[in-house]
Length: 194
Picture 1: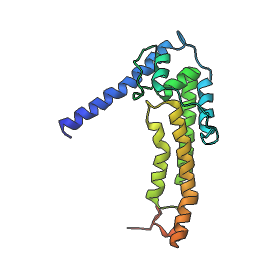
Picture 2: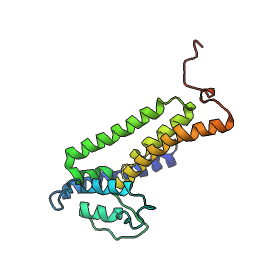
Picture 3: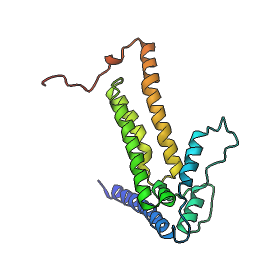
Picture 4: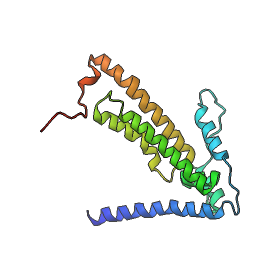
């Protein structure tokens, strides 16, 4: 590791700190100045991800992340279409449900992602690296702490759906085209003593 890598890591750490500061400002501002939303943000997220735009062409665009951050932190930003500053999904969950509710919902979201991960991992119908890649795709959306709630939930739900379709439909179809059997790939099974 050289000094360039160290300073790059340090810059990333400082950038992460900004999101923690936004969360702290949100917790200071809500409910003192701006009241909790009592589930309205979650309802809007669920409505947004369950209404595909090709069926609902008049569906409104997602609100600007910077406007949401300004509203709930009390900070004022110069808005620019090319800038997205979010309080992150934990901050939005705090605004929606308070501290305990936010932690419970985050735990539920993590449990759902863990369940999907386990189901994908235990399918046993694909090569180990292929299945591991699909598992990674499922949990990756939760790693972006500073990402907006609607984007996090949307990417999580659709990543899970796509991963299961690829594993259950796409992969077997490709095997059928090639004439391979699903068990002809290397599996992660004990082979006996080395």
